[in-house]
Image (cartoon, rainbow, N blue to C red; front, side):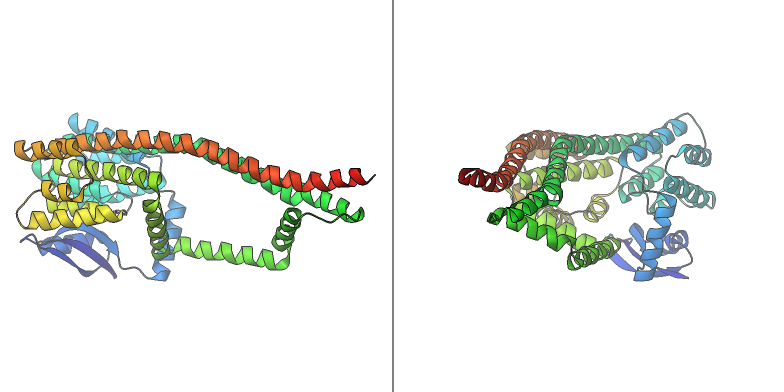
Length: 407
């Protein structure tokens, strides 16, 4: 027997959280369904040994599916269901064509759960490789009888995520390559070129410049036993932190808090998070998920402080019988056009469509900011590296010129 931590809502709509004992996640889902609980998240009760075993199992099975793979899966399942293929056969076909071993195994387990009489949303919710967004939309669509249409919407959602991630990666590739080349050049100078000049100057009885002494001192520390031990200890600490979910979460929070204080990077991160927020919320609402349930799904992965505050304000407003408009207006995250768009959505009953349009607008703004950021970053990296190299070379050539001047 194992224990599972669940979050969900009871039949009265109240949020509940607790711990249930079961042999497997599917049995835990079934037990909670019997209690009338609508599950929004389910995970095993973690201890250190169990966490290590799960991570080793994930690594043996393969990496988790990317947004592009999930988009292809949704497209395939939607096309098969639209063509009249039974759900179990569609899942079996998707499993055979899955590239990721982890995705294939999860599809097999989900198909087995569906064969036992469970709903597709519950079967997907019991598999950690599938995001909560996918499980919730499929669960609501299965009840409403529009599963193929929901799969198409999910495919569009994951394709947008894939395209946005690809654009960010492409925009930052050149600065990364420049920084890597600069690090390699500085390492070459520090570990191979400057030591030769240091030995030469000592033989010529020439006083070493302070910059050259500093560089050679850093090299000696790094290559000494103490430096190697410190490097090994740092690598071990980073490895342990990588295994620990709490450490990773703390590191992400610290980096996020730092980025929020930077002028351009802070705005870029906020725009990206807002685009994901509006697209995720719009997709969930368009898929038939209730607003409070949609907020539960989105809040599970929220990282930005201002968006956490916005989510809490929206929850309070909805629980009091109001809508999205006032909390969003008070947060000051959208301009007048975005607020007017959301107000139109509430007045006409087309909030999901307006949220998706807001997501498109935020993605466009994020693209423009990203282009500006990379345009500023590239010359800054080149100038900084040029200055460092010039200082190192000056520390080498000045003693040479002084020696020639004494001849």
